[in-house]
Length: 95
Image (cartoon, rainbow, N blue to C red; front, side, top):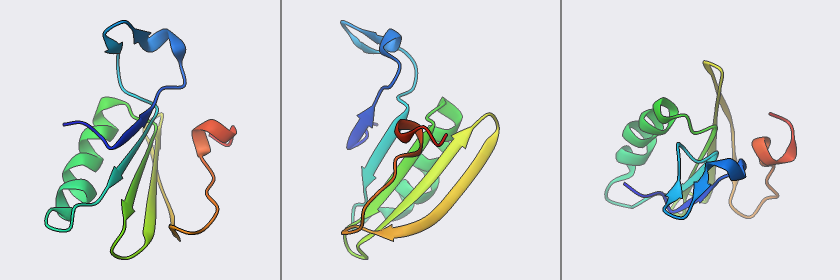
């Protein structure tokens, strides 16, 4: 299952064949008919795989849900509107 967008911050994870291990940041665009898949199943899969930050973008509600996983810590941030400014925790140095 491929995410809509993924970012790898650690260049040592990259090879000619792709990424070794989990990407650091994953963004999923919610499908109208299958939103539970992104909010529940993929959320748990990415957390278990070692993804550090997971965003779920819901174009129907115009909300972005941010989940942050680090060292057995699970943070859910307050959703923000798709037209708002965004802060990337792992890229901005807050994480």
